[in-house]
Image (cartoon, rainbow, N blue to C red; front, side, top):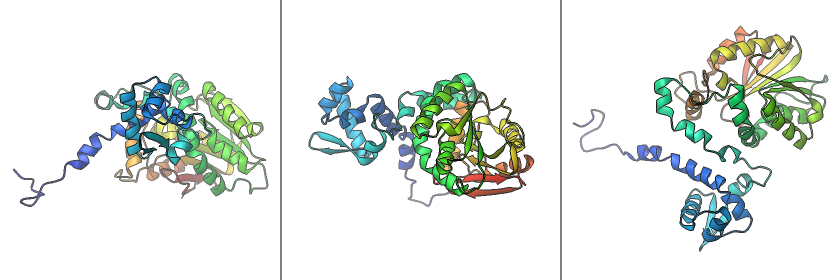
Length: 340
């Protein structure tokens, strides 16, 4: 029986569904190439499938198929039987180069979690809990190396939008669950007088210090090792707090409590900047924040992505009286709220 939504003699094209179910393939191709150091081997002058296979300790047949797939994905170019890095791969996928962002693909951690999605939805039990110290210290030092490169320019735009470097007094900043420190680093670079307190689990802070030294701002930072759920931020201590991709892992109850404690820790006129994946209020789009909500399902106990309307309610409850959004070039605008 024909669908009542179709006129006689017409049929819906099933190709979008086929493309969707096979869309895991590019991710697997990219991850395999990173794990085999294909991009580094090509950068070192190995140009044929046989040369790359020898360097990678892999089969020539499989390597040739992988290189052809990477060419089809426009990460490589090919002339006769020789392959070369496309500009995007040369900039971001060669392990030895400063903008390398393949760290998160060096294991199958994310793919393994997502492969259990149906069971996780059925049972409500996630295999990982990244809000907890043990899982966080295992995964985040690798993830934040990728996120540092991805968020570096958005962080600089946010620092500019917040007026870093324009105030007469020294800015006191709290960077919560700081990761690589990318958000605090951008503020410290824009305002050499600023002082940033970086909070994260101790093992993650080891990675933070590495990036602070790389950006030559370590002297502007203080460190608060620990769990954001238990941290004592004090009262009327900071001018600005930054929550860079933090609240989606925490879930509603923890996020509301955190915002209340941050509200108390900010001076009168202080601000909090929230950077996260924010769906529209109807939760019909954009696609990335909606898909990322499922990412929090497989990697946390209570995580989710939250709408601007939800954030506004929580911020009002925490004592903030102004809320604005700021375009910084990420997946969603930053949310900046101010205290009276």
